[in-house]
Amino acid sequence: MLLNRIGFLLLILPFSMTSPTYETTQSDNWQRDILKLHIGMYKPVPICEDKTYCENTLYYPSDIVSRELGKNPHLQDYATVDDIDSLPGYGDELEDKPLCLSTEQLIFPKSGITKNLEWKYIINHEDLVQAVRIETCVEESRPCKVIDGFAEGYYTKCKQKFIYRQLLSLTDNEHV
Image (cartoon, rainbow, N blue to C red; front, side):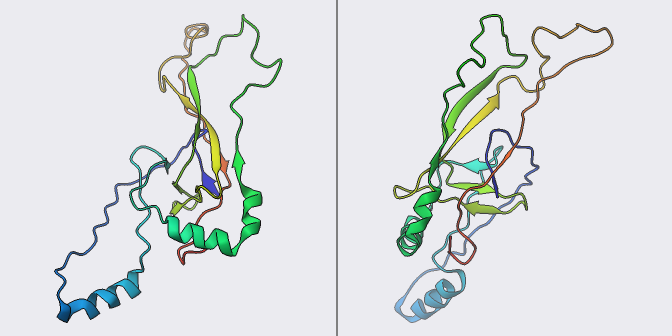
């Protein structure tokens, strides 16, 4: 299961991964080939600051995703695009005012964090799209509208809600 931001509540600690740099000559090509065997062409999954998903990744493994989707055409059944339209008769009343302001949007995550706090590449490719509707709190930690100060001695504050979403992703050994 991957987390997608209809809200997320995870602590992500700073993490840095650097790749080795070396000069390539004819005599040390074998070293580069051995290094490729050990780390593969699979780049580290990007970690996005202040989010539990990334929509844009510098090294998205499109070739690996295409290969895996070609080998497993049944995975097309898992393509999904959430609707952003509101339900009829729900929230249409003029007198309804939200306690906390939020924005809704569709995202197409390319990497995300699992409930086990592991970053994975999410399958989001021209051949299989997984779009997720998210709602982001606009005034997090600010007092709620309308009812703030309603009961003496109590205070209110807006909080981001979080939810798990299950999406197809690549495993560490480059399979879906």
